[in-house]
Image (cartoon, rainbow, N blue to C red):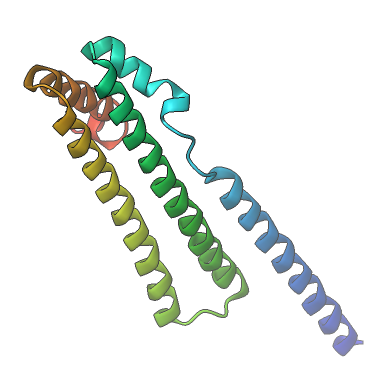
Length: 155
């Protein structure tokens, strides 16, 4: 009787772990969908109006926005896959400390790559702008970025 109860409990726990793994993976994939083109969100048009951009500037920035969107979309997909792998390993309890640290290192590298790509994008956009446009562009970015998230709590 005890052996049968033990077998049922193990099977139930395995089923629960499988369901939890599916749920975590689904949450990760839904919450981390590839980034849409910034242009499709109206950012280039906003910059055109706010900074009085010329046609050649608009086209150059639109190209940069599309490149950034592709880069960040790729990184987001890879980040989600690594995060799902970490979640699945934690749920299954099969990961060693070295494997966990390797997955965390991969997540950190992808996040660093995204931040670097965003910085490079801002630098490239700034190179297209006049000094006055650049000053307004960077000022608007800082107000936007620092008005929410962790920066807003530091004020």
